[in-house]
Image 1 (cartoon, rainbow, N blue to C red):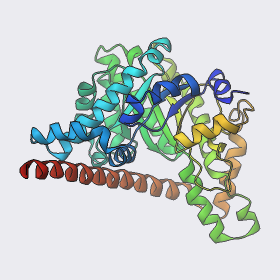
Image 2 (cartoon, one colour; image 1 turned 90 degrees about the vertical axis):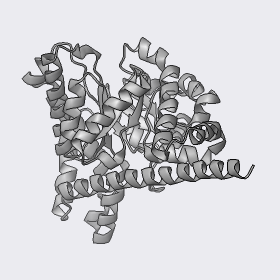
Image 3 (cartoon, rainbow, N blue to C red; image 1 turned 180 degrees about the vertical axis):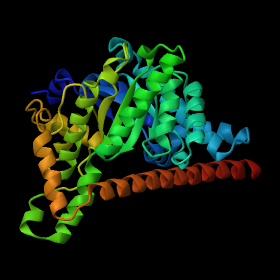
Length: 373
């Protein structure tokens, strides 16, 4: 069988899994996916943890019981559960981390999304998570909000590796690259070895098409309809060009020993069944990027993906034309991306609230059971 995942890896695309659960860890599934599907990293978010704990309660029952016996709150319980899962995943991926000299083999954990607009709170939470997990192949996920940008700089300056999440616009991505570079410059001033600091910038893909396709469908003209399904890939390809431009800048070139902040394509599961389920992977192939895939997308690419090589290099002009045409139909790129960022922050905060409720109920159920026995 033509192994498209192997070809992606050989072309310089790092394949990461956008999913984590304790069952995936203890069953050997994660280790199996590393060997069978070339998985080289794992990303998580509050929605993923809520799904894992709500649907796989038996895997977490004993730890929830222990937390209830200690009188821990739902927040404290969640912190223990999630950091334990992430620490275990880091250990499983440690061989990849070592063989890639620290580039891959990474596992991400997100700061409490309720801190998305709190710079100081984000910095403190990042330091706490970094110390609690205690693994060098950890990434702390910080959202690319206005408040998140200075937090990214300060956390990088402390020598903590960061996965910047919820990036939708090229302009915000440029600010993220600036925040990372500023952090490295501060780290140098602080006497920290910057060669030990890694970062990725998670640029969200499919949600852009979902939003803009709805607008184009509402406009309904033939010229508008022909643009459906083009915005997200064009957006990501323009981000890639911005990445290359930044690497060529004198400022970046002056940072001897600095590790490149790799673009990471996130939200790569196809939401419109009219589109090929592999498009946000195979249409975004570039040497040195990361693609974090939901399990369904990973399996789809393995099953019927068609690898055609680098599909990003040299596409900046055509991608800019796509956005120029969208602007001609009254679609404001900044407004779209700002709205998507706000929605993304809200969705993660809702997922966190749902996770709190689920764990609160589980703690209360155990306490009630004990009181009646």
